[in-house]
Length: 440
Ligand SMILES: [Mn+2]
Image (tube, rainbow, N blue to C red; front, side, top):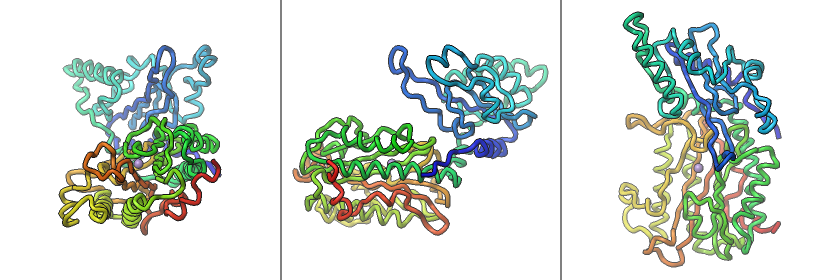
């Protein structure tokens, strides 16, 4: 399997594009910080997505500064190399490493930020900076603004605008390059292997975490160092819980198993869901409900093409789901009217699609000023209809309670329509059933 990494050249081009949008100001983006778990143990660190997108640098506590009018436009503040730290915690780039390997024009110690950053920003009256993401950097910037303003009586050169660069960055991240698409494909192929193993190991009496282990073993074996989000391995009524992550129940004969998971590959993640019967055979009722969701999903995927919107795809989905809910007797009346009233919301309470990329719910708006973002070639989105008949909905017929079904694929928009990047994971009933439990 070829693993295409995002190269220094890609990061450099991204910075150039961002600077071309923000020529009249300095752009400042902070890296993430470690988050303590307890005592001297941190949660696993993963770089802040925007910072990584422009730098490829994976250490915490750094700050990127882009100065388009300077001869040295790409500046980085980072933690200097520390021998003790390196011995205890592993390799770190330090000032020298970041200068040699990351294409920065100038690098300084993060400890110098408060006195060096005001110097660097001297020639700029506009800052592109997202306030409210990093309280420490907010304070540093606020101090610079205050000090420049108090000096303004003499030179008139103070900071007049602080503009959030988010919209520009989101628009960039929304359109994927070929390298990014390749990485997403790799992440999806790895996830495919995991789903196949999970299918093969499903059997009544096992626990959700055992299936999770088989799934994630394939992720790790193939070179994915972490998931894009915590895996949902949900059996029985847990499949109706959208954000279920306990993954500690026993698989019961006659119940369904829903898995929503994605391997991350060099910062790009898959996001795939399948649902199957634990004992290898759908009951007639499960089949009926599954078929409704599958039909909605296939119709929605057919709708993915340039000029369509996440809203138009959602309309197709909820229309099909509403028809299905009428068929199985949970809704009565006219489809169009029921769709308008959002009567389906009781059993389908989430959206049909979201952008996919560095973040599982990736950057990019769905609509602005009441106009929906039109799909363009190079965008990647999920299509994930579902129906959830929670045991907590009292009025549901007993036999329906605990049936939760979602089917989710990852779709690349192309010039002529789309490519379903996760189509290799089976979802037709007669394809799925023979694979269940054959290795358990
Ligand atoms: Mn999703």
